[in-house]
Image 1 (cartoon, rainbow, N blue to C red):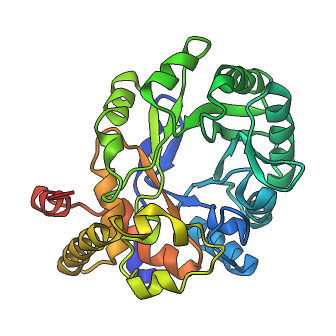
Image 2: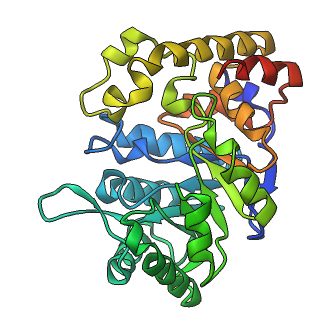
Image 3: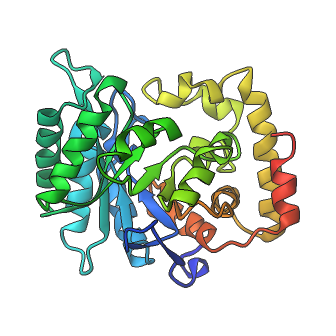
Length: 322
């Protein structure tokens, strides 16, 4: 899709009750972290900066990253890209996963650790306040109350504007909400991983919790170019190579879903990934979707998903037997 095809800026929605008006697609910066333990393989920083700049030019107004992505590298690249932006985007990041003394990823939600993470994120991003700070995973589960208290403390001090969680269950949200309301949730949600639609998304809608879903394209499975051959050729450092959804017995069923997405995309004359994103946005609980862009061209191809209207017949066809 050409830049002209991308058209008007994407539509917006209020993120829960935060008061933030966000575009219905945001820039996901996981892959921007580059080649690391849980990364997507090698990534050129210049391409990452170019993708972020193009996203902002086309009207996307928020970026989601995490301190653990590339162990700080993603936040550094995001900071570099937004430093010269005329109108700064909203910046969301996450805490709770850090590198241990052996250089391996570990979970920690202790107060002092989260405070160190927040200060490091502020410095790398080059901002005075983080617009949304989120607990990345509810791990260790015994520490989620301490971690949540730390986020509330950072908000009270003005270092972060809003606080939320990622990958939490209904029960875990209820556990921490007693000390302060959870403003947002970030769950995985896609045609190949639709389970959030059963309980957590209706709960968030009822409670007024803002929702930004991640992996709406199934981490690339629904992007229109994923094949068995492509998966086999992924770098060994790409986490997807060993992921269950990219291997049997799940892979065959997922590729069938991808084929249906492709047929609907062809009927609409749009890229397959845009259809996959649009499907997630049909859920009334979902305010916006995080899309992982690795190049300016991908931004131009997929931004249309923010405003693509799928029919009930499209949705029924896409979701059959899934």
